Amino acid sequence: MAFLHTAGSKVSSLKEKKSLLPYLLLAPGIIWLFTFFVLPIANLARTSTQTPTANGDTGSYEQTYRFANYIDAFLDNKEQFSRSFIYAFLATILALAIAYPLAYGIAFKSGKYKNLLLVLVVAPFFTSFLLRTIAWKQILGEEGPVIALLRGVHIIGDNTSLTASAFAVVTGMTYNFLPFMTLPLYASLERIDPRTMEAAGDLYANAFTTFRKVTLPLSMPGVVAGTLLTFIPAAGDYVNAAILGNPNTKMLGNVIESRFFKIVDYPTAAALSFTLMAAILILVTVYIRKAGTEELV
Amino acid sequence: MVLGFTYLFIPVAYTFAFSFNNGGKSNLVWKGFTLGNWQNPCGAPDVCVALGNSIRVGLISTVAATFLGTLIAFALGRHQFKGRSTTNTLIFLPMATPEVVLGASLLAMFLNLGINPGFWPVVIAHVMFCISFVVVTVKARIASLDPRLEQAAMDLYANEFETFRKVTLPLVAPGIAGAALLAFSLSFDDFIITNFNSGTLTTFPKFVYVASARGIPPQANVIGSAMFFLALFIVIAGQLVSRRKAR
Image (cartoon, rainbow over all chains, first blue to last red; front, side, top):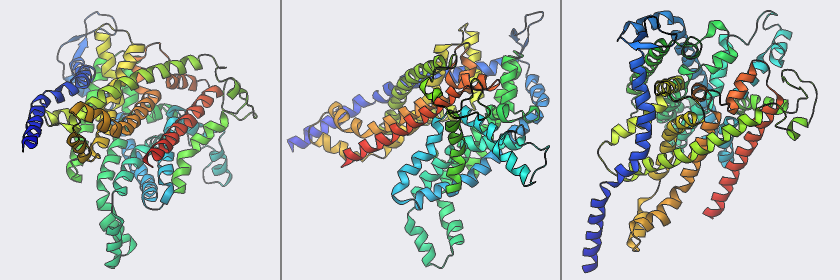
């Protein structure tokens, strides 16, 4: 009894000490995130309502709380705005279509090679994504093998190109974000007990019904996480559009980048950044509500 | 599945193949096989300076982000405290924010404060966006631990610090290693945020992007391919080691 008693008091004294510990653990990282994430975003919000100083140099702005900046920025870049979301949406759907069979195969059909295949999904990451995107540009390009083949069998005409097009931009985005889609899909598929599928078969469900009624619903958390991890970076991406696109495929990211560096129009860049972020957060929130999975991270 | 993997690896194979191209300064068309690029990977101007910068930024950011992120993961995974959901949101938001916005907002703040973009701003930015990924990775590992192992250590009169050092930390270590590898590869491959905050500093992705306008030297392909094989080697070696330990 004496032993039990001391053990008990030891635990309770630990608990009292512990009450400060989590905050000590959190503090450095949270302070970092606050200083270099929250403050810059707040600062960006401030910048977004500034206007150029009267007879000032280019690039100098003063705070006038001009919220019309948002309307101007949006109206000037409606096309790029909708393009960002359409491309990101298409890339997400395509990535889902490619990644689902891939993840399914790794989770259920790969036997002892499972870990190796999983490593292979991530492996392309380690060759710089810019090099891979440029490789696509050259593969699909005028001197590349694909275009020669397609022209040879007259699927496309001599004047049609694959690069410098919306097609190339979407293909590039699909490719670059494919691992982000595959990994969460795999994680949720792998957790499914194969006996649930066998049970469906025992209950006379055919393969398609089993998939639709059992596998797919059980893998929904992976679908939601994967589509988010693909859609969010895709909507803000500008590298694919810059390398694989043409002036008519510019996305919002390209506009923000050039406003910042070439025109030094900070307020418009800030307003666009904010609109993009808000639009993404709204879409994500609605999507998560609809999909009904709260626990994502 | 085969189609999916083919799609994933076509550009990697292309990059690898063209690292043997005897292409001189631009690497657009196949001009013949050579080992010269592999023998002299620094042959193209500035490519190794850029690589060195990327490695320095990557190592410093990885150490800092892994340390900060692991602490947060332990707080979230092992402790109850007020402000938990706020913390979770703060961890999630940087991952849900497009990179252009992260990069642009940091640059705007640095400029307002009169800090010139360059090496340290890039490191600060990389640490910032890597922390969240480290937290998520390490937290998942902590959540998968059996709490009874720690209770058993306590029952055997280990104090809290000993339990942490001898039981918890070794068990979480693979998660921390994985998080560090992830952080390094995110940092090493980052272009968008780096481009905003680097000023005149060249990193490897920035070198490739700038060079892409006038043709990328084959040495860049050599470095990209070498990184690929190095990372594959580290991952596979890591798996073999952990498998041997488990035995």
